[in-house]
Length: 201
Image (cartoon, rainbow, N blue to C red; front, side, top):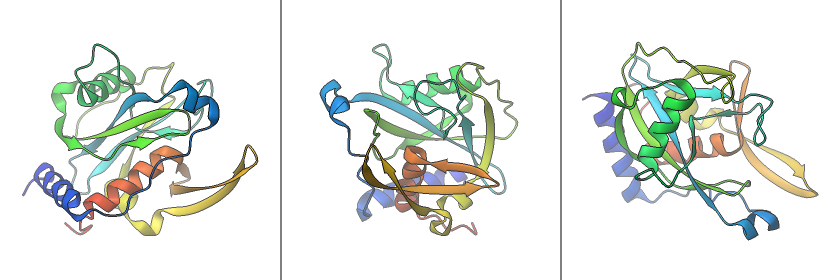
């Protein structure tokens, strides 16, 4: 069975299992008043002997989420047919990934960010050999992390902080000194609960 088939089957099984998922962040008052902005990200899984996921590091100059690790993606534009087209478009703009190289598996659970975005993760598979061409204004670095490592609950650590006078909890995944946290980590946790793939396969 191919990786794409395994992911597609696991995602479908997960939909029927109804696992407990993270609900998304509570919005601040100004974000609630502004409303939610639809967005999409591409969870691009590279079909290696040990599959990996493509992640990006945002520049420190970004207005929102500077210096954070994220999936390629962004807001859904009026010209996009939906989240899948938006995720593929953003991935091409941000890291130079042609949509033709991506076999789309499906979409995972929506996640609402504290900054007012309602994000649809789009799962796709691509073959090895793609060389990223990061957009300098949006991406400081591109790297791959093992899918099994990210999905392993042992690496999904709950942390706590005070933010704007409120106590908050969030997930953090450390991979080779790279701190994956916030909405990206939460979407990974939700995906792990949907997929529950056997790491050995």
